[in-house]
Length: 273
Image (tube, rainbow, N blue to C red):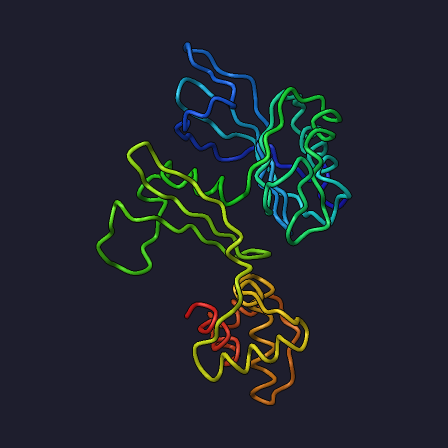
Protein backbone atom coordinates (compact mmCIF):
# COMPACT_ATOMS: atom_id res chain seq x y z
CA UNK A 1 0.00 0.00 0.00
CA UNK A 2 1.69 3.18 -1.22
CA UNK A 3 0.09 5.43 1.41
CA UNK A 4 0.18 3.18 4.45
CA UNK A 5 0.73 4.09 8.10
CA UNK A 6 4.39 5.08 7.66
CA UNK A 7 3.37 7.83 5.28
CA UNK A 8 1.03 9.30 7.86
CA UNK A 9 1.81 12.72 9.25
CA UNK A 10 0.63 12.98 12.82
CA UNK A 11 0.71 16.72 13.23
CA UNK A 12 -2.30 18.41 11.65
CA UNK A 13 -3.95 21.78 11.97
CA UNK A 14 -6.91 21.62 14.35
CA UNK A 15 -10.27 23.19 13.55
CA UNK A 16 -13.07 23.84 16.01
CA UNK A 17 -16.66 23.60 14.79
CA UNK A 18 -20.03 23.92 16.48
CA UNK A 19 -22.15 20.82 16.73
CA UNK A 20 -25.35 20.78 14.72
CA UNK A 21 -27.26 19.04 17.48
CA UNK A 22 -27.57 15.62 15.87
CA UNK A 23 -28.49 12.99 18.45
CA UNK A 24 -26.58 10.25 16.63
CA UNK A 25 -23.20 11.74 17.55
CA UNK A 26 -21.86 10.99 21.05
CA UNK A 27 -21.94 14.19 23.08
CA UNK A 28 -19.25 15.69 25.25
CA UNK A 29 -21.70 17.81 27.18
CA UNK A 30 -21.24 18.13 30.89
CA UNK A 31 -17.83 19.72 30.57
CA UNK A 32 -15.94 16.61 29.56
CA UNK A 33 -14.33 15.60 26.29
CA UNK A 34 -15.94 12.80 24.29
CA UNK A 35 -14.00 9.78 23.14
CA UNK A 36 -12.49 10.12 19.65
CA UNK A 37 -14.78 9.66 16.65
CA UNK A 38 -13.55 8.39 13.30
CA UNK A 39 -14.74 10.67 10.50
CA UNK A 40 -14.04 10.25 6.79
CA UNK A 41 -14.62 11.96 3.46
CA UNK A 42 -14.51 9.20 0.85
CA UNK A 43 -14.60 10.13 -2.82
CA UNK A 44 -13.76 8.43 -6.07
CA UNK A 45 -10.06 9.33 -5.93
CA UNK A 46 -9.16 10.06 -2.31
CA UNK A 47 -10.24 8.85 1.11
CA UNK A 48 -9.59 11.34 3.90
CA UNK A 49 -9.73 10.21 7.52
CA UNK A 50 -9.57 12.16 10.76
CA UNK A 51 -10.20 11.85 14.47
CA UNK A 52 -12.70 14.23 16.04
CA UNK A 53 -13.66 14.90 19.64
CA UNK A 54 -16.59 16.81 21.13
CA UNK A 55 -16.36 19.11 24.13
CA UNK A 56 -19.67 20.75 24.96
CA UNK A 57 -20.89 22.30 21.71
CA UNK A 58 -17.45 22.38 20.05
CA UNK A 59 -16.17 19.74 17.67
CA UNK A 60 -12.38 19.51 17.39
CA UNK A 61 -10.89 17.78 14.35
CA UNK A 62 -7.35 16.60 14.97
CA UNK A 63 -5.12 14.06 13.25
CA UNK A 64 -5.90 13.82 9.54
CA UNK A 65 -4.58 11.99 6.50
CA UNK A 66 -5.60 11.46 2.86
CA UNK A 67 -5.09 8.14 1.10
CA UNK A 68 -5.35 7.32 -2.58
CA UNK A 69 -8.35 5.03 -3.00
CA UNK A 70 -6.54 2.98 -5.63
CA UNK A 71 -3.96 1.94 -3.01
CA UNK A 72 -6.52 -0.03 -0.98
CA UNK A 73 -8.81 -2.89 -1.86
CA UNK A 74 -11.58 -1.82 0.53
CA UNK A 75 -12.66 1.14 2.64
CA UNK A 76 -11.95 -0.90 5.74
CA UNK A 77 -8.33 -1.42 4.64
CA UNK A 78 -7.84 2.33 4.29
CA UNK A 79 -9.54 3.03 7.64
CA UNK A 80 -7.43 0.38 9.37
CA UNK A 81 -4.25 1.95 7.96
CA UNK A 82 -5.25 5.31 9.42
CA UNK A 83 -6.24 3.91 12.81
CA UNK A 84 -3.03 1.90 13.05
CA UNK A 85 -1.03 5.07 12.36
CA UNK A 86 -2.78 7.07 15.09
CA UNK A 87 -3.04 4.12 17.50
CA UNK A 88 -6.75 4.73 18.04
CA UNK A 89 -9.71 2.40 18.50
CA UNK A 90 -12.83 4.55 18.21
CA UNK A 91 -16.27 3.05 18.84
CA UNK A 92 -18.19 5.48 16.64
CA UNK A 93 -17.62 6.55 13.02
CA UNK A 94 -19.22 8.69 10.34
CA UNK A 95 -18.32 8.22 6.67
CA UNK A 96 -19.30 10.87 4.12
CA UNK A 97 -19.34 9.01 0.81
CA UNK A 98 -19.57 10.06 -2.84
CA UNK A 99 -22.83 8.42 -3.82
CA UNK A 100 -26.50 8.17 -2.92
CA UNK A 101 -27.34 6.57 0.44
CA UNK A 102 -30.38 4.47 -0.41
CA UNK A 103 -29.57 1.11 1.15
CA UNK A 104 -27.43 -0.66 3.73
CA UNK A 105 -24.89 -1.31 0.97
CA UNK A 106 -23.55 1.85 -0.65
CA UNK A 107 -22.15 1.72 -4.18
CA UNK A 108 -19.92 4.64 -5.07
CA UNK A 109 -20.72 6.66 -8.18
CA UNK A 110 -17.14 6.97 -9.47
CA UNK A 111 -15.27 4.22 -7.62
CA UNK A 112 -15.25 0.41 -7.51
CA UNK A 113 -15.47 0.53 -3.72
CA UNK A 114 -18.62 -0.74 -2.00
CA UNK A 115 -19.54 0.09 1.60
CA UNK A 116 -21.53 -2.59 3.40
CA UNK A 117 -22.44 -0.59 6.48
CA UNK A 118 -23.30 -3.43 8.87
CA UNK A 119 -20.42 -5.65 7.74
CA UNK A 120 -17.89 -2.82 8.05
CA UNK A 121 -19.25 -1.89 11.48
CA UNK A 122 -18.80 -5.48 12.64
CA UNK A 123 -15.32 -5.87 11.18
CA UNK A 124 -14.11 -2.61 12.72
CA UNK A 125 -15.77 -3.41 16.08
CA UNK A 126 -17.77 -0.17 16.03
CA UNK A 127 -20.86 0.51 18.13
CA UNK A 128 -22.19 2.82 15.43
CA UNK A 129 -21.28 3.58 11.82
CA UNK A 130 -23.20 6.39 10.15
CA UNK A 131 -22.95 6.82 6.36
CA UNK A 132 -24.13 10.03 4.70
CA UNK A 133 -23.75 11.57 1.25
CA UNK A 134 -20.53 13.57 0.98
CA UNK A 135 -22.24 16.75 -0.19
CA UNK A 136 -24.90 16.39 2.50
CA UNK A 137 -22.00 16.49 4.94
CA UNK A 138 -20.42 19.45 3.16
CA UNK A 139 -23.68 21.40 3.05
CA UNK A 140 -24.25 20.69 6.76
CA UNK A 141 -20.84 22.18 7.54
CA UNK A 142 -21.11 25.36 5.43
CA UNK A 143 -22.70 27.52 8.12
CA UNK A 144 -20.06 26.39 10.59
CA UNK A 145 -17.38 28.23 8.61
CA UNK A 146 -15.97 31.62 9.55
CA UNK A 147 -16.29 34.58 7.14
CA UNK A 148 -12.58 34.41 6.28
CA UNK A 149 -13.05 30.81 5.10
CA UNK A 150 -14.97 32.14 2.07
CA UNK A 151 -13.76 33.78 -1.13
CA UNK A 152 -16.25 35.94 -3.00
CA UNK A 153 -16.30 35.18 -6.73
CA UNK A 154 -18.99 37.66 -7.75
CA UNK A 155 -20.42 40.45 -5.64
CA UNK A 156 -24.16 40.75 -5.16
CA UNK A 157 -26.94 41.03 -2.62
CA UNK A 158 -27.97 37.70 -1.14
CA UNK A 159 -31.45 36.52 -0.23
CA UNK A 160 -31.34 34.94 3.20
CA UNK A 161 -34.62 33.08 2.58
CA UNK A 162 -33.51 31.52 -0.72
CA UNK A 163 -32.04 28.01 -1.04
CA UNK A 164 -28.25 27.76 -1.17
CA UNK A 165 -26.57 25.49 -3.71
CA UNK A 166 -23.38 23.76 -2.60
CA UNK A 167 -21.49 22.46 -5.64
CA UNK A 168 -18.02 21.09 -6.16
CA UNK A 169 -16.13 19.37 -8.98
CA UNK A 170 -13.86 16.48 -8.06
CA UNK A 171 -13.82 12.99 -9.52
CA UNK A 172 -17.46 13.81 -10.31
CA UNK A 173 -19.68 16.84 -9.68
CA UNK A 174 -21.22 16.90 -6.22
CA UNK A 175 -24.26 19.01 -5.39
CA UNK A 176 -26.52 19.59 -2.39
CA UNK A 177 -29.10 22.19 -1.34
CA UNK A 178 -29.49 24.09 1.91
CA UNK A 179 -33.17 25.05 2.17
CA UNK A 180 -33.93 27.57 4.95
CA UNK A 181 -37.14 27.14 6.92
CA UNK A 182 -38.58 28.39 10.24
CA UNK A 183 -37.83 24.97 11.73
CA UNK A 184 -34.19 25.14 10.67
CA UNK A 185 -32.19 24.45 7.55
CA UNK A 186 -33.08 21.36 5.55
CA UNK A 187 -30.19 19.68 3.76
CA UNK A 188 -31.08 17.93 0.49
CA UNK A 189 -28.37 15.76 -1.10
CA UNK A 190 -28.70 15.39 -4.86
CA UNK A 191 -27.15 13.55 -7.78
CA UNK A 192 -27.38 16.71 -9.89
CA UNK A 193 -24.06 16.01 -11.56
CA UNK A 194 -25.82 13.37 -13.65
CA UNK A 195 -28.24 15.70 -15.43
CA UNK A 196 -27.64 15.94 -19.18
CA UNK A 197 -25.18 18.53 -20.44
CA UNK A 198 -26.95 21.36 -22.32
CA UNK A 199 -24.53 23.24 -24.60
CA UNK A 200 -25.05 26.99 -25.01
CA UNK A 201 -23.14 27.75 -28.23
CA UNK A 202 -21.73 26.11 -31.35
CA UNK A 203 -18.36 25.36 -29.79
CA UNK A 204 -19.95 23.62 -26.80
CA UNK A 205 -22.08 21.61 -29.24
CA UNK A 206 -18.89 20.39 -30.93
CA UNK A 207 -17.39 19.48 -27.55
CA UNK A 208 -20.58 17.54 -26.76
CA UNK A 209 -20.33 15.64 -30.04
CA UNK A 210 -16.70 14.76 -29.30
CA UNK A 211 -17.56 13.33 -25.87
CA UNK A 212 -20.57 11.47 -27.30
CA UNK A 213 -18.17 9.33 -29.33
CA UNK A 214 -16.98 7.83 -26.04
CA UNK A 215 -20.12 8.15 -23.90
CA UNK A 216 -23.59 7.71 -25.33
CA UNK A 217 -25.11 9.90 -22.62
CA UNK A 218 -23.16 13.01 -21.66
CA UNK A 219 -23.95 14.24 -18.16
CA UNK A 220 -22.74 17.58 -16.86
CA UNK A 221 -20.02 15.91 -14.79
CA UNK A 222 -18.44 14.63 -18.03
CA UNK A 223 -17.33 18.25 -18.34
CA UNK A 224 -17.45 19.71 -14.82
CA UNK A 225 -15.02 17.47 -12.95
CA UNK A 226 -11.32 16.68 -12.99
CA UNK A 227 -11.71 14.26 -15.87
CA UNK A 228 -14.23 16.68 -17.40
CA UNK A 229 -11.54 19.34 -17.81
CA UNK A 230 -9.44 16.70 -19.55
CA UNK A 231 -12.39 15.91 -21.86
CA UNK A 232 -12.83 19.59 -22.74
CA UNK A 233 -9.11 19.98 -23.45
CA UNK A 234 -9.02 16.89 -25.66
CA UNK A 235 -12.06 18.08 -27.59
CA UNK A 236 -10.66 21.56 -28.14
CA UNK A 237 -7.34 20.11 -29.32
CA UNK A 238 -9.17 18.10 -31.97
CA UNK A 239 -11.34 21.04 -33.03
CA UNK A 240 -8.19 23.16 -33.44
CA UNK A 241 -6.46 20.42 -35.44
CA UNK A 242 -3.53 20.26 -33.02
CA UNK A 243 -1.93 17.12 -31.56
CA UNK A 244 -3.78 16.03 -28.44
CA UNK A 245 -1.50 16.55 -25.47
CA UNK A 246 -2.05 13.91 -22.78
CA UNK A 247 -2.39 16.33 -19.89
CA UNK A 248 -4.09 15.72 -16.57
CA UNK A 249 -6.43 18.26 -14.99
CA UNK A 250 -3.77 19.81 -12.75
CA UNK A 251 -1.37 20.12 -15.69
CA UNK A 252 -4.04 21.80 -17.83
CA UNK A 253 -4.77 24.24 -15.00
CA UNK A 254 -1.08 25.11 -14.53
CA UNK A 255 -0.63 25.57 -18.29
CA UNK A 256 -3.64 27.88 -18.34
CA UNK A 257 -2.44 29.98 -15.40
CA UNK A 258 0.98 30.46 -17.01
CA UNK A 259 -0.64 30.90 -20.45
CA UNK A 260 1.80 28.26 -21.70
CA UNK A 261 -0.77 26.62 -23.99
CA UNK A 262 -3.60 28.72 -25.52
CA UNK A 263 -5.89 25.67 -25.74
CA UNK A 264 -5.39 25.01 -22.02
CA UNK A 265 -6.46 28.60 -21.37
CA UNK A 266 -9.53 28.09 -23.54
CA UNK A 267 -10.38 24.78 -21.81
CA UNK A 268 -10.28 26.38 -18.35
CA UNK A 269 -12.34 29.34 -19.58
CA UNK A 270 -15.01 26.98 -20.94
CA UNK A 271 -14.93 24.96 -17.70
CA UNK A 272 -15.52 28.12 -15.64
CA UNK A 273 -18.03 29.79 -17.98
